[in-house]
Length: 622
Image (cartoon, rainbow, N blue to C red; front, top):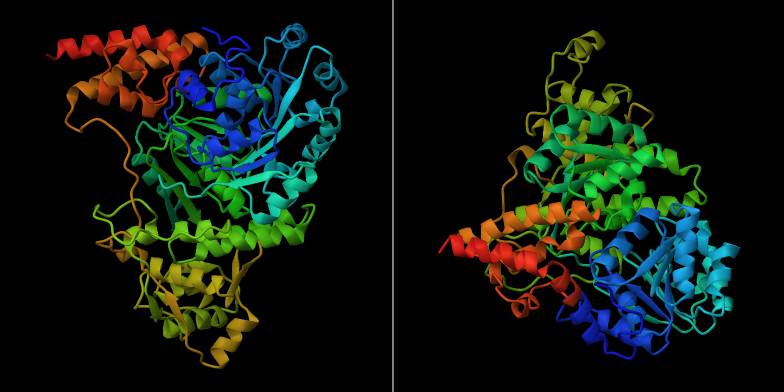
């Protein structure tokens, strides 16, 4: 079933939302953004990943008489959006280098005949004379220009792309079109850059909360990274996850190790052939592979709602990049997990890489913000939101059991402890060993190791050998991380050699006192109360065996249907929709329209099959 152009011209946004997309209510700011666009006002919308940005231009596109042009940075993202719109009955096309010439001509012909409502193009494609001539033809009226991932236009954004700067020239070609800029990550500086660089005209600015409450935030000190990754994967058996690495070499190495251990995993980075990269992404989107190990190149190309965990194997270069990556988890609103493995050793690697960036000073400022976040000992959510200028105040009372906010809130914030003597010990040990060794060696000396290397160097005879009985090895690593974060110790060189800074020398000479938020990770205890609220989502009762059978059967049916249509399973129905099916067990078409995410097109297209599956399961169990 296809929605014909003109069907919803002058209709209300609420009618389109329910009829086409199957939703009863708008998400935060969607209604306000749509209302402003329909008035002809330029809009900048900052909404978190999974916040429903696409609906903000899709609904006006159906109501406007002309076409909506969407500038999107990745071919894969365009394909995904067009597939999703097609499943909802909305005819849209993409114009990019992946099209054969005959397919391009066919798409252009449909655009001129008024059969298309939404056109996806890349920023460089929009700059081409061919596409500009097409959009400027007499038969075509451009009602709206939407810039997706608009932070790419700002040099303060985490993914600046010079070709985005060319977009602003399109305003002179279509002066009557309204402009909508959308992004998930934008500080005040980035927002100002977007408005200026896109030449937006007195735009209304809508900034949604950056709080993704369904994502549990966790940071672990990177000790044995592979074991930590496996431990996280085991918590999410059979679920989709993304592991981000900073280099292609690390990406391939980690993917290979996990593959040899029997995990369903593929890699993704710019060094792979285009066909391999596209195939790997397609398999992940279609649930044919569970885990993708990727570089940041994978970031904006994913619209998969059921990613249950994201692991940052390496430190991201900025908080905005980190937020964008963890935002790939839990787009459907269900509980998900974001794990960052942090070691100050990553800082040196990143600084080496950003030396050749367009603006190393700016890159260093962004990196320092990420370091401050990773090393902080307060609520992760509070720290993260503060970066975007948002205050987070946990509920005053919470009757639920300990919940999923972050590891700090779950475990209880580490109390400040007087660490003066241990700090003096480890810093003195660094000096006694002539500042020529890394963390593991120094800690082995402190804890009395008799390794051949220590014996050969005679470091079993120095005054700091075997004086570190008060902390476990993990405790000493934690203390060292805190001292590095305080600027008393630093790592340098390819082997992360530890040296004492000028501030560290002053600390030792003056016998200063120091209190630090210490948790010996080998003895971590869980707090009895949580400071953060849990999101409650609608789902069947745990002992509802009929519901479990419905979910299992619908997942199998969804996968077969998706394979037949050559689309990802979530394009048919998201997991949240499956939960609603199982909880409500609709028996009629009317009841079907009360299910989350079911509009008239999907009810018509898939309703009979779904109702038959549910009816048969219910009948068999009675």
